[in-house]
Image (cartoon, rainbow, N blue to C red; front, side, top):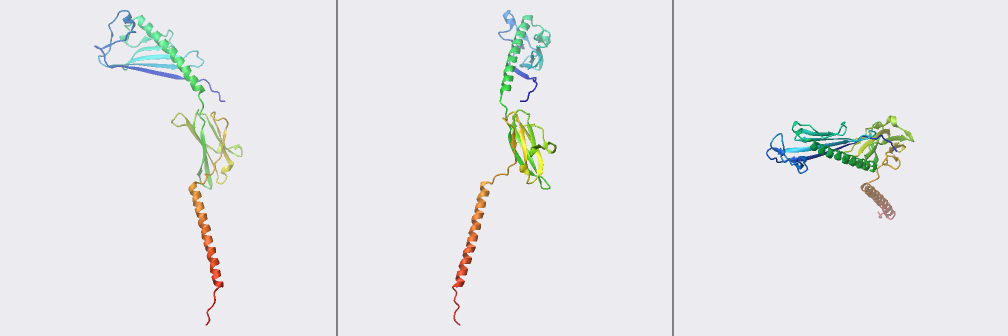
Length: 277
């Protein structure tokens, strides 16, 4: 079992709200707005009259050994950042990032800070669940086979394939009579397959006719035990078998006909009587 160091993981959540209509260029914060609780019904002015978009970007970074995750949240009105929160600050609070937000009172920022801290706790909990599911997910074993390709000078190339495996770490080794042939191998880098799995191959040039002396050893955590592969000549196809049978029948038929004709011609000569002159 391969042991790896804890890795930093990143969880990014993004939310957006399209404000397709504004009244006289004002943004209404909704019924939870602390200003409305104080009886302040006048909405905050927007920088530009018209339609706007409101977006929040939440980022959580796990930090093994640090003791706590890093959580940050940024709010954008259109393309302008207007609020920000970072758990790494000396006194983590939601802070204004636009001049037109600085007019809000302390109660508003206290409320927004409480919301940001709740989001931080929820995101950390979600990340723990995601990491747990990831760590307990089954590995995907490789699909393996060996192919044979003509080379030159009465030699061939044997290529050992491993396809559709996860995780990325895998070992492919050619051997002859149990001895590694790593010095003569052509080994490509592990490549993504495009569906979340990986692929890899290892090639070796061998004398033609000695293919059965070479084996490919495949090791991967998705396998219960290492695999030993050997190139096997392709089986005869049904069409080829039928052709061979047809040819055999034809040969037997021709030979039988020839023998029969020879026997018959010999018998006729034995019964021939020359006419009197």
